[in-house]
Length: 110
Ligand code: HEC
Image (cartoon, rainbow, N blue to C red):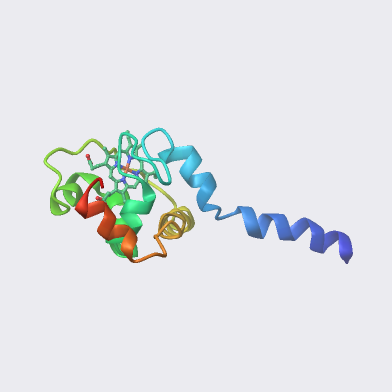
């Protein structure tokens, strides 16, 4: 019995690991907190809902227009439902806890 339990636990944890999805598909263009080719996850999380994030990943061509981007440089991804769910939660986990954080972004450098 003990052996079976030890074998099952890692699968349950790693099956939908958002960090892994990030490292596989998004890492080249996005960073968690720093601006890369695309915006950082902390910034995305502070202004988008889970549904908006999911929509952007599945259909960046149309959704980037809705978001106000003049160009669309992000490719679309055919992620499985569990991967989509995991990466969405992973992005939202970078939502700044301090509500003043978004203010300091809009007011610019001090
Ligand atoms: C080839 C580079 C590239 C890759 C790979 C990429 N992105 Fe992007 N992403 C961008 C760029 C550039 C933008 C800005 C909008 C645009 O140009 O389409 C963006 C925008 C976004 C946005 C919306 C930003 C906003 O304003 O809210 C989300 C959400 C997002 N990316 C998530 C992801 C996720 C999740 C992955 C991995 C599955 C990923 N991206 C992979 C380049 C990329």
